[in-house]
Length: 263
Image (cartoon, rainbow, N blue to C red; front, top):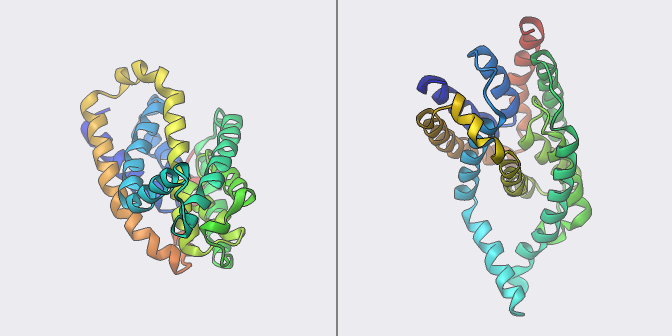
Protein backbone atom coordinates (compact mmCIF):
# COMPACT_ATOMS: atom_id res chain seq x y z
CA UNK A 1 0.00 0.00 0.00
CA UNK A 2 1.37 3.41 -0.94
CA UNK A 3 0.69 6.84 0.58
CA UNK A 4 -1.94 7.84 -1.98
CA UNK A 5 -3.91 4.64 -1.45
CA UNK A 6 -3.74 5.10 2.33
CA UNK A 7 -4.87 8.72 2.01
CA UNK A 8 -7.84 7.77 -0.15
CA UNK A 9 -8.92 4.93 2.14
CA UNK A 10 -8.49 7.14 5.23
CA UNK A 11 -10.66 9.86 3.72
CA UNK A 12 -13.23 7.25 2.68
CA UNK A 13 -13.33 5.87 6.23
CA UNK A 14 -13.65 9.34 7.76
CA UNK A 15 -16.66 10.14 5.59
CA UNK A 16 -18.39 6.77 5.59
CA UNK A 17 -17.94 5.90 9.29
CA UNK A 18 -20.22 8.73 10.39
CA UNK A 19 -22.36 9.51 7.40
CA UNK A 20 -24.80 6.57 7.20
CA UNK A 21 -23.43 4.95 4.05
CA UNK A 22 -21.44 1.99 5.54
CA UNK A 23 -17.71 2.50 6.03
CA UNK A 24 -16.93 -1.23 5.93
CA UNK A 25 -18.79 -1.61 2.64
CA UNK A 26 -17.03 1.37 1.09
CA UNK A 27 -13.64 0.19 2.33
CA UNK A 28 -14.24 -3.25 0.84
CA UNK A 29 -15.22 -1.83 -2.53
CA UNK A 30 -12.48 0.83 -2.35
CA UNK A 31 -9.80 -1.76 -1.66
CA UNK A 32 -11.13 -3.88 -4.52
CA UNK A 33 -10.99 -0.95 -6.96
CA UNK A 34 -7.47 -0.03 -5.79
CA UNK A 35 -6.25 -3.60 -6.16
CA UNK A 36 -5.72 -4.06 -2.41
CA UNK A 37 -7.66 -7.25 -1.77
CA UNK A 38 -4.90 -8.59 0.52
CA UNK A 39 -5.16 -5.78 3.09
CA UNK A 40 -5.67 -7.33 6.56
CA UNK A 41 -8.79 -6.63 8.60
CA UNK A 42 -6.59 -4.95 11.22
CA UNK A 43 -5.98 -2.06 8.80
CA UNK A 44 -9.73 -1.43 8.60
CA UNK A 45 -9.92 -1.54 12.38
CA UNK A 46 -6.96 0.87 12.66
CA UNK A 47 -8.93 3.35 10.55
CA UNK A 48 -11.97 2.75 12.79
CA UNK A 49 -9.80 3.54 15.83
CA UNK A 50 -8.81 6.82 14.17
CA UNK A 51 -12.45 7.75 13.71
CA UNK A 52 -13.07 6.64 17.30
CA UNK A 53 -10.73 9.49 18.24
CA UNK A 54 -13.13 11.81 16.42
CA UNK A 55 -16.02 10.48 18.54
CA UNK A 56 -14.04 11.07 21.74
CA UNK A 57 -13.26 14.62 20.66
CA UNK A 58 -16.74 15.65 19.52
CA UNK A 59 -18.56 14.03 22.47
CA UNK A 60 -15.88 14.74 25.08
CA UNK A 61 -18.28 16.71 27.30
CA UNK A 62 -20.80 13.84 27.53
CA UNK A 63 -18.07 11.24 28.07
CA UNK A 64 -16.45 13.32 30.80
CA UNK A 65 -19.87 13.83 32.38
CA UNK A 66 -20.51 10.07 32.50
CA UNK A 67 -17.17 9.47 34.20
CA UNK A 68 -17.76 12.25 36.75
CA UNK A 69 -21.28 11.00 37.52
CA UNK A 70 -19.96 7.46 38.00
CA UNK A 71 -17.38 8.72 40.48
CA UNK A 72 -20.09 10.61 42.36
CA UNK A 73 -22.27 7.48 42.40
CA UNK A 74 -19.41 5.36 43.72
CA UNK A 75 -18.81 7.94 46.42
CA UNK A 76 -22.52 8.08 47.32
CA UNK A 77 -22.82 11.71 46.22
CA UNK A 78 -24.83 11.35 42.98
CA UNK A 79 -27.78 13.72 42.58
CA UNK A 80 -30.45 14.63 40.07
CA UNK A 81 -27.83 16.31 37.89
CA UNK A 82 -26.31 12.87 37.34
CA UNK A 83 -29.53 11.08 36.34
CA UNK A 84 -29.02 11.39 32.57
CA UNK A 85 -25.40 10.26 32.66
CA UNK A 86 -26.04 7.34 35.02
CA UNK A 87 -29.06 6.30 32.94
CA UNK A 88 -26.65 5.61 30.09
CA UNK A 89 -24.42 3.14 31.90
CA UNK A 90 -26.56 -0.02 32.12
CA UNK A 91 -27.95 0.26 28.54
CA UNK A 92 -24.42 0.81 27.18
CA UNK A 93 -23.11 -2.27 29.00
CA UNK A 94 -26.07 -4.43 27.96
CA UNK A 95 -25.94 -3.21 24.38
CA UNK A 96 -22.20 -3.85 24.17
CA UNK A 97 -22.68 -7.49 25.23
CA UNK A 98 -25.32 -8.02 22.54
CA UNK A 99 -23.18 -6.25 19.93
CA UNK A 100 -20.25 -8.52 20.77
CA UNK A 101 -22.38 -11.66 20.56
CA UNK A 102 -24.00 -10.71 17.25
CA UNK A 103 -20.70 -9.52 15.79
CA UNK A 104 -18.95 -12.74 16.80
CA UNK A 105 -21.58 -14.84 15.06
CA UNK A 106 -21.43 -13.00 11.74
CA UNK A 107 -17.94 -11.47 11.63
CA UNK A 108 -16.48 -14.26 9.48
CA UNK A 109 -19.17 -14.04 6.83
CA UNK A 110 -17.53 -13.02 3.56
CA UNK A 111 -19.64 -11.06 1.11
CA UNK A 112 -19.04 -10.31 -2.54
CA UNK A 113 -19.03 -6.71 -3.71
CA UNK A 114 -22.33 -7.41 -5.45
CA UNK A 115 -23.98 -8.47 -2.18
CA UNK A 116 -22.50 -5.41 -0.45
CA UNK A 117 -24.09 -3.26 -3.15
CA UNK A 118 -27.43 -4.90 -2.43
CA UNK A 119 -27.01 -4.08 1.26
CA UNK A 120 -26.46 -0.44 0.30
CA UNK A 121 -30.03 -0.52 -1.01
CA UNK A 122 -31.25 -2.10 2.24
CA UNK A 123 -29.50 0.64 4.22
CA UNK A 124 -31.13 3.27 2.00
CA UNK A 125 -34.57 1.81 2.78
CA UNK A 126 -33.77 1.89 6.51
CA UNK A 127 -32.73 5.54 6.33
CA UNK A 128 -35.97 6.47 4.58
CA UNK A 129 -37.96 4.59 7.22
CA UNK A 130 -36.10 6.46 10.00
CA UNK A 131 -37.77 9.69 8.87
CA UNK A 132 -41.04 8.34 10.31
CA UNK A 133 -39.56 7.11 13.62
CA UNK A 134 -38.68 8.72 16.93
CA UNK A 135 -40.19 9.61 20.27
CA UNK A 136 -39.60 11.56 23.47
CA UNK A 137 -37.40 9.17 25.51
CA UNK A 138 -34.25 10.67 27.03
CA UNK A 139 -31.20 9.12 28.65
CA UNK A 140 -32.61 8.64 32.15
CA UNK A 141 -35.48 6.54 30.75
CA UNK A 142 -33.42 4.68 28.16
CA UNK A 143 -33.39 1.37 30.05
CA UNK A 144 -31.79 -1.98 29.35
CA UNK A 145 -34.37 -3.31 26.83
CA UNK A 146 -33.81 -0.33 24.53
CA UNK A 147 -30.07 -0.68 25.02
CA UNK A 148 -30.27 -4.33 23.98
CA UNK A 149 -32.23 -3.49 20.83
CA UNK A 150 -29.74 -0.83 19.74
CA UNK A 151 -26.82 -3.13 20.59
CA UNK A 152 -28.30 -5.87 18.40
CA UNK A 153 -28.71 -3.43 15.52
CA UNK A 154 -25.09 -2.38 15.88
CA UNK A 155 -23.97 -6.02 15.90
CA UNK A 156 -25.79 -6.71 12.63
CA UNK A 157 -24.03 -3.75 11.04
CA UNK A 158 -20.76 -5.72 11.13
CA UNK A 159 -21.90 -6.85 7.67
CA UNK A 160 -20.26 -4.68 4.97
CA UNK A 161 -22.86 -2.53 3.26
CA UNK A 162 -24.94 -2.09 6.43
CA UNK A 163 -24.28 1.32 7.95
CA UNK A 164 -23.36 1.09 11.65
CA UNK A 165 -24.32 4.68 12.38
CA UNK A 166 -27.48 4.59 10.29
CA UNK A 167 -28.64 1.27 11.72
CA UNK A 168 -27.92 2.27 15.33
CA UNK A 169 -29.63 5.64 14.95
CA UNK A 170 -32.66 4.07 13.25
CA UNK A 171 -32.90 1.47 16.03
CA UNK A 172 -32.79 4.21 18.65
CA UNK A 173 -35.56 6.08 16.88
CA UNK A 174 -37.58 2.86 16.54
CA UNK A 175 -37.54 2.32 20.32
CA UNK A 176 -38.72 5.89 20.94
CA UNK A 177 -35.60 7.95 21.60
CA UNK A 178 -35.51 11.64 20.84
CA UNK A 179 -33.58 12.33 17.65
CA UNK A 180 -30.62 14.06 19.28
CA UNK A 181 -30.42 11.31 21.91
CA UNK A 182 -30.54 8.55 19.27
CA UNK A 183 -27.75 10.25 17.33
CA UNK A 184 -25.42 10.77 20.27
CA UNK A 185 -26.10 7.35 21.78
CA UNK A 186 -25.32 5.62 18.47
CA UNK A 187 -21.77 6.96 18.63
CA UNK A 188 -21.30 6.42 22.37
CA UNK A 189 -22.11 2.72 21.99
CA UNK A 190 -19.58 2.46 19.16
CA UNK A 191 -16.69 3.17 21.56
CA UNK A 192 -16.55 -0.24 23.32
CA UNK A 193 -17.41 -2.04 20.06
CA UNK A 194 -14.43 -0.56 18.20
CA UNK A 195 -12.06 -1.12 21.11
CA UNK A 196 -13.21 -4.74 21.38
CA UNK A 197 -12.67 -5.34 17.66
CA UNK A 198 -9.17 -3.89 17.94
CA UNK A 199 -8.25 -6.20 20.82
CA UNK A 200 -9.50 -9.25 18.90
CA UNK A 201 -7.37 -8.41 15.87
CA UNK A 202 -4.15 -7.41 17.67
CA UNK A 203 -2.57 -10.86 17.10
CA UNK A 204 -2.59 -10.01 13.37
CA UNK A 205 -0.45 -6.89 13.91
CA UNK A 206 2.68 -8.59 12.57
CA UNK A 207 1.06 -9.61 9.29
CA UNK A 208 -0.30 -6.09 8.66
CA UNK A 209 3.21 -4.61 8.58
CA UNK A 210 3.99 -6.85 5.60
CA UNK A 211 1.23 -5.20 3.54
CA UNK A 212 0.76 -1.76 5.10
CA UNK A 213 4.00 0.11 5.99
CA UNK A 214 4.01 2.34 9.07
CA UNK A 215 4.07 5.58 7.06
CA UNK A 216 0.94 4.96 4.97
CA UNK A 217 -0.82 3.54 8.02
CA UNK A 218 -0.12 6.72 10.03
CA UNK A 219 -1.26 8.91 7.14
CA UNK A 220 -4.45 6.92 6.65
CA UNK A 221 -5.30 7.16 10.35
CA UNK A 222 -4.58 10.91 10.49
CA UNK A 223 -6.77 11.59 7.46
CA UNK A 224 -9.55 9.35 8.83
CA UNK A 225 -9.49 11.29 12.12
CA UNK A 226 -9.59 14.75 10.53
CA UNK A 227 -12.27 13.89 7.98
CA UNK A 228 -14.20 12.02 10.67
CA UNK A 229 -14.43 15.09 12.91
CA UNK A 230 -15.80 17.15 10.01
CA UNK A 231 -18.26 14.43 8.99
CA UNK A 232 -19.56 13.95 12.52
CA UNK A 233 -20.17 17.66 12.97
CA UNK A 234 -22.02 17.66 9.66
CA UNK A 235 -24.17 14.64 10.54
CA UNK A 236 -25.55 15.59 13.95
CA UNK A 237 -27.69 18.56 12.75
CA UNK A 238 -29.04 16.32 9.97
CA UNK A 239 -30.05 13.71 12.57
CA UNK A 240 -31.78 16.33 14.69
CA UNK A 241 -33.81 17.46 11.68
CA UNK A 242 -34.78 13.88 10.82
CA UNK A 243 -33.21 14.04 7.37
CA UNK A 244 -31.18 10.80 7.22
CA UNK A 245 -33.18 9.89 4.13
CA UNK A 246 -31.03 12.41 2.24
CA UNK A 247 -28.27 9.81 2.14
CA UNK A 248 -30.52 7.35 0.32
CA UNK A 249 -30.14 9.65 -2.69
CA UNK A 250 -26.51 8.51 -2.81
CA UNK A 251 -26.93 4.90 -1.65
CA UNK A 252 -29.60 3.90 -4.17
CA UNK A 253 -27.64 4.75 -7.33
CA UNK A 254 -24.41 3.49 -5.70
CA UNK A 255 -26.08 0.18 -4.89
CA UNK A 256 -27.60 -0.17 -8.36
CA UNK A 257 -24.28 0.64 -10.07
CA UNK A 258 -22.53 -1.88 -7.84
CA UNK A 259 -25.03 -4.59 -8.73
CA UNK A 260 -24.58 -3.89 -12.43
CA UNK A 261 -20.83 -3.26 -12.67
CA UNK A 262 -19.10 -5.13 -9.83
CA UNK A 263 -18.38 -8.89 -9.77
